[in-house]
Length: 292
Length: 292
Image 1 (cartoon, each protein chain N blue to C red):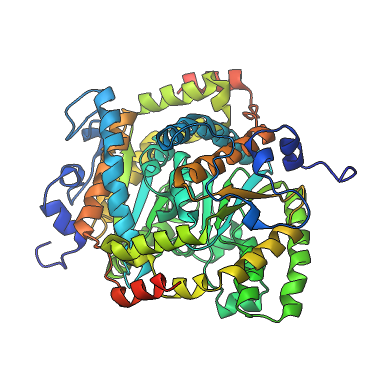
Image 2: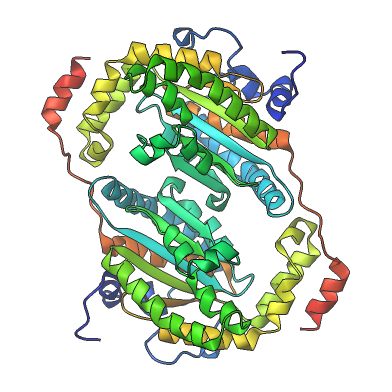
């Protein structure tokens, strides 16, 4: 680790903060050892947590605008937040409540469903690359290329040879992103199987939530241990300083939203974007304007 | 007008509301007769206006989610909000403060710059069609195909023959959108030339806003009367029941944000999306889930 190029994320982790606390250490991963109800780094009640999230709004919007401004000039940097997790873990909730605090013009949100035949033919990373954020933007992936080593592996959608090669392909791709100015932030939203049952139950109990449920959810749920095994492999084999994984305890929705938003804010601050200098003569322009 | 197909927008205008008050009547348009400082339909102060906007958040989010849910099932409907206006009129401000009240997952925002050579070769509507919202989404255009009868006309970027034909091409395109379930909402953000000078001045005075200014803004400003003439033509020739224009008094930012958001909310309500029915057996699924 000592000799590797120091990426923005590596510097941030060194600086401490919530990111450093939720960062997955290198080496084998066992998610059963991570408490899904933890509130790491937050001292307070649910109500406090909701207020703390709201309170991040002004600050994160300000940093977001600076990054956006930089991208409108010569800046090449962007952020990519990857959200992964089992059904009902709250990927959409994080976007609604966390990303929803920011200016939607500075966001590029992509939700990945099962790939189409045309997408498959182009290789699993093709559609991912189409969806990358332009300079100045914060990209958010609701599911991602990790599905290609998760459901693809669990459901035998491709041969073991194929999915096995993908870990290195992902590492190469993510290192390239980092080199190109895309700061990656990968969050696994960690819920317990019991919590998932309750959330699916709630969707079945409430007619205004019926559209969120589909019978396939129970089929996937039955494969919980297989998915955990696939997550362990992904979190171990694709976890670099340039493209770190965070495990977000997500049984408490309010904590999950606050934690992801806080890590995003820390990442923005570590990039430290600045208001661009004028690339014109301000005094001259003032005169020209006054003459109109 | 009496015999034309009744679109959602036509029904909404009949029902009254702010949309009906800000709707541009058919026939010749003279923007100098529209007060840029008006607060049509709103009785209160700036502070009241900001609170009134915030107060729309919960209701508009709820309707947005219903439209989104419909689109996830068999629904084919979407909304497209087109924002036009002179530099500094606040297209970005409306998105930040109005659209920012909603879930960013349900928005598809596109900002149109000068077309690239590749885009031009494909005809002026090609890139617009690429950016249309999918079913269930609210699309927002920051500038649009109207630039092709505004700057293109004022700056002689194409011959008069070419821009002259575009009005009908736009009408055909917009009628097609309406027929395909895309409800159009076109807002002209109306500021005075004096207000624009103040806003450009503010950008020059504040180093954190220098990036928003470019010297070309003054060049365009000098052509104000030509732009007004081009807007008059667009607002007269492309103003149908299916694709109505609204003039939004925009010298007061708080009113502009409230007004556009209110018309968007009225449009959502007129579509009256409903929570989709379950397309599975709820009782069966409850049993399946309980068994896991």
